[in-house]
View 1 (tube, rainbow, N blue to C red):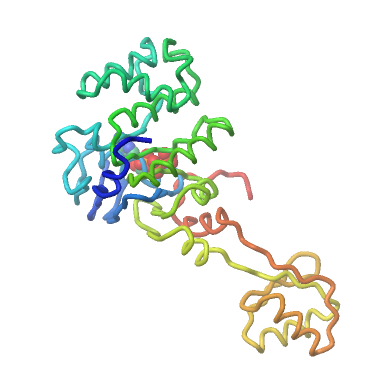
View 2: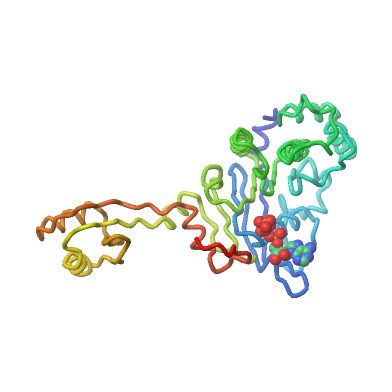
Length: 316
Ligand SMILES: Nc1ncnc2c1ncn2[C@@H]1O[C@H](COP(=O)(O)OP(=O)(O)OP(=O)(O)O)[C@@H](O)[C@H]1O
């Protein structure tokens, strides 16, 4: 994406949060949060609504002052960066753009006030697919177009660190695929890419690493692969006319058995092959033997269940 890709991967800038805390009166939005966001990876920042993701990102950008702890980018606080837009690009609130300005003029004025060549405004409009509407007033833009413009502004200074707060909001399916690819490309160039979402399924497709928070506290800090392995429970659904006897045998060998719908059982701790062989050895006929995979979304919901602030009243 940039000519300086090789240097970027060599220079790699880390985001480092240490004991980061933010209180708003009686509300502790972020509580003693410590993590690193490393270059060359897409790091997903994930948590339910109100978990503290935006507050954390705002503190990284110096828009909110921490009540405790510290956060730095490339070893320096944001406010000490000599040319912030060239070091960190961020999309935080896509709608916070002057509605009377054209997309091009919005980017041009940002470029001019940050010592970035004017030609870069046209270049980033092309990168985000808005070149045909660059002259149009931002007030008439859809949320998806505003998201793209916000991403263009983040890319303006060609920075080694990029942060996106819920970037797929308002994007159509083609836009979602585009932003996924863009984030992966930016990370492949050696940049540090930090992206928030409340959708685990989205992050599973995009991120290499995950930082999971709930009620401002760190719940997980691990690779997507490790998260998938540790979080997805495999159960086996078994149906048989001899469920009671089968349950006794399975429990004896250490499996956990729970009754399930329509006269079936759910078994954890043994795979379907072992269950099948055990049933055969005892002469029990099986009518069904099916491995069930809990989705990542299920795992995430389970993990953050106790830290969801805003729960719908509609039963699942
Ligand atoms: N300026 C503020 N004044 C008071 N409380 C605030 C302020 N900003 C955020 N909060 C509170 O801090 C908590 C964390 O909010 P934050 O917006 O950071 O969460 P989030 O994870 O980004 O949520 P969402 O996914 O809904 O955007 C919430 O309880 C919120 O109400």
